[in-house]
Amino acid sequence: MENSRASLMFKAAAVAAIGLTATFVMLVQDPDTLFGGGYPELWRRTGLAGAPTRAAACIFAGVFLLAMGWLYRLLFAPLELLRGVDEVGYIAEDGRSRAQAANEVRRRRKTGELPPVYPNGWYRVLDSHMLERGDVKSVTVLGQQVAVFRGQDGKAYVVDAYCPHLGANLAVGGRVVGGCIECPFHGWQFRGTDGKCVRIPYADKVPEFAKVRCWPSCEINGQVLVWFHCDGLEPSWRVPEQSEITRGEWVYRGRTEHFINAHIEEIPENAADIAHLAHLHTPGIVSGVDLRYTNSKTWEFIRHDWKVEWKPEPEPDKHCSQMLVKHALTVFGRHWPLLDLDVVARQVGPGVVFLLFEHSFLGRGVIMHCVTPVEPLLQCVSHTIFYQSTIPPLVPKFILRAECIQFERDVMIWNNKTYISKPMLVKEDSAIQKHRRWFSQFYSENSPRLRYQHDTLDF
Ligand code: FES
Ligand SMILES: [Fe+2]
Image (cartoon, rainbow, N blue to C red; front, side, top):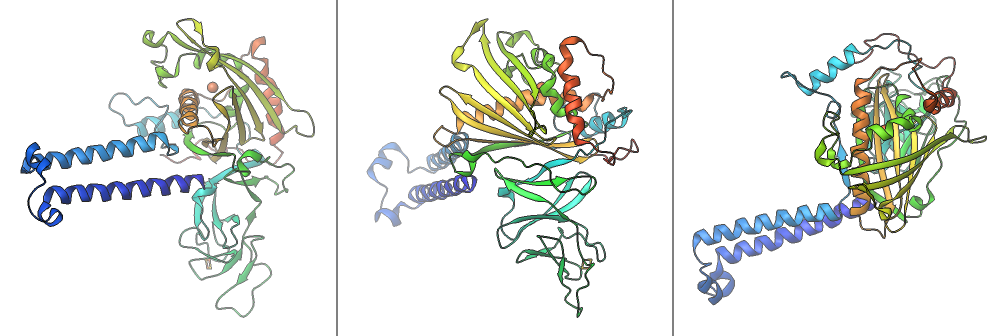
């Protein structure tokens, strides 16, 4: 909602700006009509009546408008950084394109003893604001095609995309009718609540067996989530709602999206890998994301210090774990206590993390970090930030940008690494083993495994 308000304000500002420019250009070009004959005295004196000056004035107005638009976006519009599949974390050298480099890395990778690829749990499929009433979207989750649609009742539903009649994709040309989705091929209508076919336009009777698979789904904190269990079991836990978002006190301020070439478990394992923080994430964010250059001497004077603890939660929340982070910034070796930041990263199941920020004067908010497997070794990761509406949007946008820089350093590691089932760990790495034990609760006997190394497509 916040997003649509921002875009409405943006449109209003754009219309006002265009109106002003049009008036300005008319004044410059046709003063006779507007001033009842002759140029205004001031224009004569300043020489604005000449053609070159008029052109210059138009250019100036254009540049001014662009600058205002840019300033508006910087200060008020949400930050949206959507990275392509091969955009981050690959090194394209020797004249190769990024896509070639990414495909080579993916082909080369050893997929030895991988854990199952689709853990049981809740996963994000879409941001709510991407799905208006009556919209249908085609999404790939956990190696399957699903159709996500919002009924006229305002509820979001997720069903298998392929129609059980003759296999058309419901999300490609399908239409929402009430709380149902209508197939584009022969017009069968399936109910969002249970997948049952309620109408076949050319048949007298709808048979009992006419059904499409319906995925348990929910909508919380501006995200549409689906439940996956390899044996088709119903959800055994829920993703909690962040009440400040529901009450409208924390509002949407932006999101990022990345595709990562790794096994899903490697991403949350980062939280229990305490040693990597002091190595990978210590250089200041100004040194960028390319690990070949992050340790450059130029930016050595800015450093991030991290104190981290990782622990699983006890029953009844054993599907949750927590990473407690204390962040400090040093500039030329001097600690700036005003920039200290405490973060609690609460992982809820295999696919959702709430990063809760609390700062003495920069306010409070949350980044919802969601990992959804697209295919066995390709994860879609989104970060969506909600922040106190009373804090200027620039603050959460800066936090999201800083988080994105640190995250893209991890992406470069993940994209190029392999999964090691029996890692060579020292005592100080013990949380990693604990994390693996904790994460194994999301696998069950029938959890899908990667059968062939080439189960993946080229980018
Ligand atoms: S394929 Fe869907 S109605 Fe025929
Ligand atoms: Fe990391």
